[in-house]
Image (cartoon, rainbow, N blue to C red; front, side, top):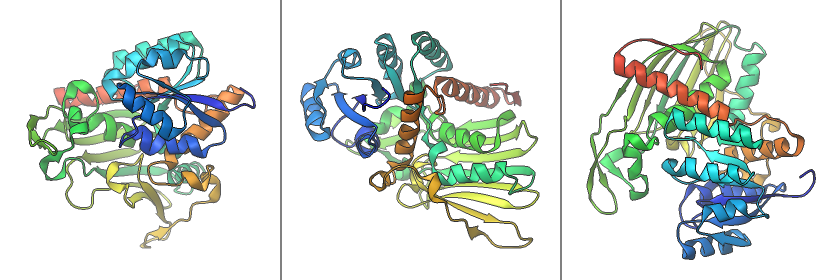
Length: 374
């Protein structure tokens, strides 16, 4: 795979509004390293339509056939979370590299099993924690490492999504209201936001957390059906990092006005803020365009910090809001596949994040502070 294109099979590549069509396909199409050779959906007509739309040579309804096809090198799993384990296992059993969307699995136990299978298969495995590849986060991380802030004292996170604002939810998203499906606020918004926080500042060492369901029912927009919610829609977190810095975070859904993310980091010599903007802002730190603000003058005001071009390494055709960070991750993964490197987050990082979410659940359930070792 040193010079030829990396051939990708996408499971869940529906030709409609799905995440694969919105992010994965345009990201892969923009990158010269990749070629989409196969797609799989649950229905033959949608699989064939997707193959025509995305220029894939092969269409499947059986994901195992896609995974086993000789013209597929990398399998991208972009379906709902409860199906991840079965589909990733199929790819691993076929000896294929895997990119799986976050959340990796519904539970930590499932994530442990997938990591063992991936290690046994000896393939590359990546998990879609693409917020790490946002240009603003990459530059902020380097500034922090270079001492721009001095010693980091604290971080304050406010992450509000517009999901379910007005008490309605689209039918495709209703499954996330069930805690058992592992795709609610804690797992998605919490997972992406806290992964970005730790990527910037280092590991969480201990935490206290509260989880609550402030919206116990939702109305399905298309049908009017009222469905119950067991998955929390609010997370309050107080934590300490291994560096000694402290963290406070409020992450929640159903924000009616100006849903957004703002991550402020305070140091002994200055402050940084990572702020979502644009149409993707309400969706979360992993999707929206991010601005970087800073100040090092006592009693000074926030100033925009321009992002150097080197923090965006994909073509302009991959610059769309939902596409950019995914394309940046895929570009780094291509380098790993060609060199044997391990620069992209794999199932091990996914497992660690699942364990962090478990610590949050334990704290919220017991009312006790939890020590976290990863």
